[in-house]
Image: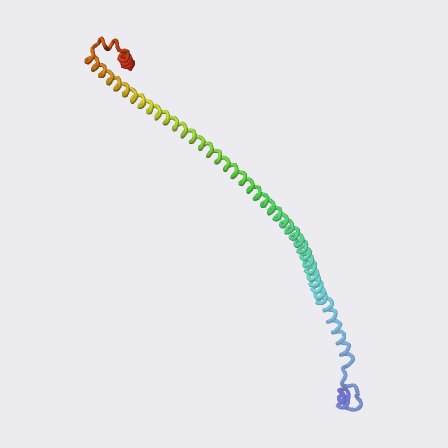
Length: 201
């Protein structure tokens, strides 16, 4: 059984709609509801709409800001990639320049080392030549001194031998003069030769 049937069963006979509100109450209720709707529509609803619009605008602004930030981030990413590519190119160029500099420095060092080695060899040759010249000069000087000394000794020896021979010849002549006399010595050609040799000596 429905609620209407239950209400109808409780009402006395002759008043079938006594459970429903009176028409005046309905009118007052409608007027009150209309006033409530008017007040809500006049004061509360604009605030709700304004709040909704503000929220919507904030959300839309946040979305636009996020999109702008995303676009900026993408642009910055593109710029960063370009800079990174430029840095890679610059790094490669610097590496190539450094390699070229290293090769050039190595070649320069090799050339300097070769020049220094040649200079040292030239100095060594000059020093060796100077030492050789000094050694030859010293050897010649020493040889000359020794030759002079040897010649002096030979001359002294020869002179001493000539002096001793002269002394021996003189003694021999003295003995002959004592034995044979001065006259026989003058007539003897051999004695004259001996005397001449003694005098030459």
